[in-house]
Length: 389
Image (cartoon, rainbow, N blue to C red; front, side, top):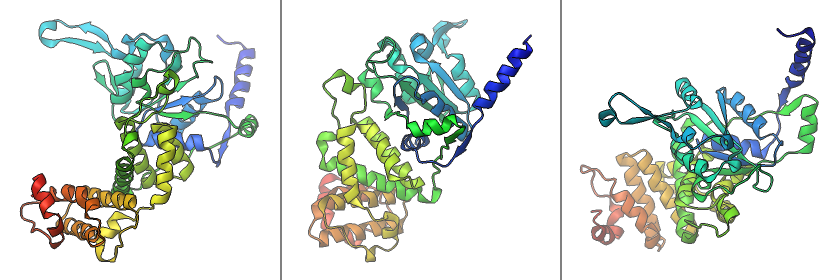
């Protein structure tokens, strides 16, 4: 039974916790929300006590979903890989790996957020057990529902209790965001007002164009810079952060598509992209994006006669890749034939080699009843050699 003194104290602390929010620009909050909307695992890096956990509560409240906090450093590998449970007939039914209670609650709810705190204090064996949880949402024998979002937090090894560097396989599964604080925001928060978190909303009408443009941008960049497809850093600290690999470029593709589809601002999108593939590759890609300025492929397919091919080779390649991706995303005979009209302009411009790969991809989409369009003549020899025709 509580005393009147404790009741009054609880009322006082309850009033302190009560706060309002107001519109305010926060690049790190917006980048976090963008990555979570893309259903990508996020890792927040920051010194102890600067609001990583508070940011998670704010995000979960903004999404209206339950939040499960798991302190990774105090768990055993079996807490994530599952505890073996032997049934009545293990020779036929096998051994079930029982999931922990937090995973069961998320599964029963059909979604939510799981927050793995103190990740850099978890030993390598625990980090290894987290690999399938982070990327595949697999906890023991239980697969978490698709709407479950994964976010983790870590202190730099220098300030973490018994800190470890993240293993490269685990680090390469996250979008890495540096979590900092603004003294002015903290001061205003102590007065009872914190910045609100705007949750990005994907516009369904933009999905097709967004996916096509993102595919064109990523594919065009990696074609021009093949050395950045995969680059594992040399030192242990850098390998525990963001670095480029086919996995993280796929994550960047999702981020970029979501950013296009929800009209994300440049700074949060740039922050999230750099946090996915690392500083070096990320900065180069952002520079490439600034000069790319891809036309809307769906508008071009609707009226290819009015389209003018970009001048630069890298823009041509990125755009033609985006056109083919747009056709594949919504395949009709009219759009397929319009795609060949676009590729024919590359031949007329004297750069058939730029369109060669796109022509092969477009050719294999043809249905048997569709006639061969006139724009395909320039690619016939190449397509016959590749077996596409």
